[in-house]
Length: 234
Image 1 (cartoon, rainbow, N blue to C red):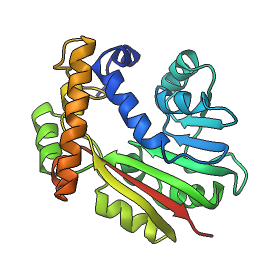
Image 2 (cartoon, rainbow, N blue to C red):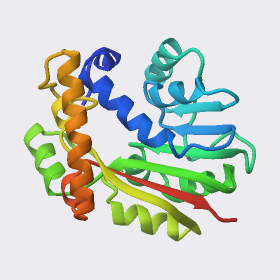
Image 3 (cartoon, rainbow, N blue to C red):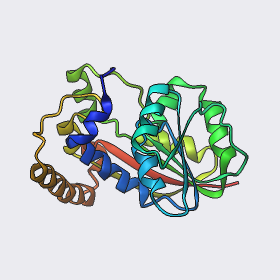
């Protein structure tokens, strides 16, 4: 689904949800060299690049997104590249981020090449951070209602994919219950007025419900995103 001026959504409730997701991811970023694959509008790369002594490079195969990212986050570095052929040296990156990207690589690229390139440019004991849609009944139903079609990579598939290439799980969690659908995400309709205290109240209440749901081991069934942090073994 294509929308006009997607960066405008960053100044609505989706922008707050986006920052929440960046916060979840950035806690696991380590080292000085970071690669953000499928960097989109540059929000993740841009925020990480603000941290001192970190070189964060975002790559994307959509030129308009690259241009927008460079304009919104001039402190970051954004390059037009395909994950099947990364133009970086071997063992270069301390951390590689795939935010809402793994399902696209799995379904739309030569995935064997993409996996090989990820491992090639990652340092030994470096991290690969996966943050992707949590395919469950709720998400599938919402997509059907909104006629939003997308590739899929279920949580269990992600674990299997990276375990087969000798990556060790360091951490895993489920997050985001109602903020994302209320915000409309990247392409949908926002159901929340652009009022700051309402945004804060939704996010605070969501954090409480996340803790409860995950304490009951129900995150797989009710949350919209999963996070898995892998360590690369070479």
